Image (tube, rainbow, N blue to C red):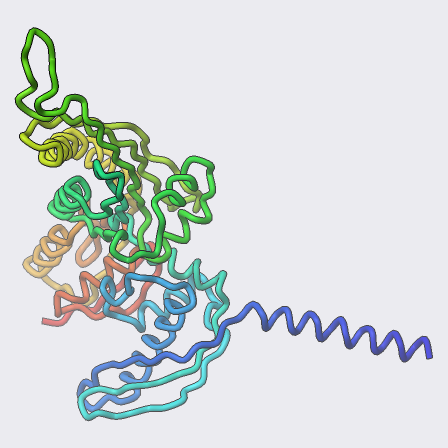
Length: 373
């Protein structure tokens, strides 16, 4: 009898472990679509499934910015997930396949491990993608999430080539929660925000206006103030994920101030915001440039099919003109060392989009292409 009880207890414990293991997975239905090129349905099927698998990862993590806006080659993405993270998609089953003539649509049910899904999303986050959240308190004490400071700063960052996600309209975050997370070191909240927007950098701030002098107020000697004078103060932090350690680093924290004069207090506050952002923008752009420079790594690019000096120079020129490439060194005919601050998958994708290059082999630090005229 004791032996029977032992067996039953063992089975019960085993079931508990199995239940716990399955409880760590989330199964979702997603779909993916790919173009059928030269009647190659098997390749279209592979890409459709890869897109559907990634859509499942995004759904489980809850991202607001889709990887499709950054990367087009989803078969390459799927391969990166397998090699860099692995085991994200525990299983998938094709539910439906629809051939539309020029495209193939595949619907699947995929089971995802959430913790590894977050790692997968994190591995595709851009160092040059910035999530911005700078709400401004109005004189009426209401918060204005989209304002002169956030809009101007976003515009300046975009001019410098950054990908910027204004997270205020998404309503997925709360200013007080993020601010408290940064101050208390609760980096899980900050990481979660970055996962949602495929970003490695988060600029957060809080703006408070203060009426120094109201229009018509007695300023002495029988004189009245002809304008309203408003001082606008802002506290901010730039938080970034360290690509080497995975930890969260505070790149900088500080305050900025702007002053405005106008007939009305509201117009003076707006003028103060313009003055503030003029003082703030150069500091933030400088810190972002330092961060990007600090993340530059060397990637070996091998281009098979380059047989003459003219083509070699053409390839080198193409590499030099890719966004965020900081330098190109020629090793030998068809082989180059490229300085690049992002995940190598984005470099591979940028080269592939030039039209004459097909990816033959990919690793984080080495990419081989086939060149075809």
